Image (spheres, rainbow, N blue to C red):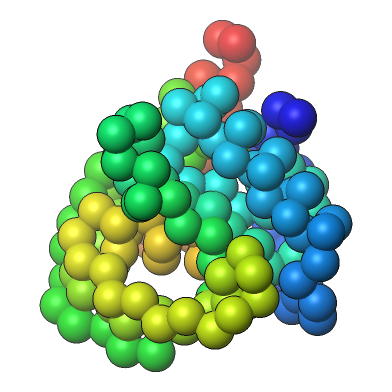
Length: 168
Ligand code: ZN
């Protein structure tokens, strides 16, 4: 089922989410909905609180093509255990329709999480998938990409977003 994507400044986006205790059928259903919602919105990643469910579940697919289904990732209670290097990228966010801002993040990361079966996994991500992961992990911690900007850059991004919202 395609769910409604919550947009900023809804408080569910700025509140840290809860850890998942058990990966059960309910989580399985949520994950299915998250993928459907993400593909429908042509996104590459989605955090559960972006559809109003405040728990630590994220999905991503940095190559949303039928011939590369193996890049679908479900990450539950994810954490970063190692970072290396820096990379700047102009990011978009499904919760800030129309806005894109340049954010600096780690270039290579090592992450730990549970997969959709509740099994522990460790992954190394680099470049675009690493960027997407860090963006979604921020969401789960109640942080949006404009919070990664400082001073006037943040103010400018917020003003631009307000104008975009008025137009739509
Ligand atoms: Zn986002």
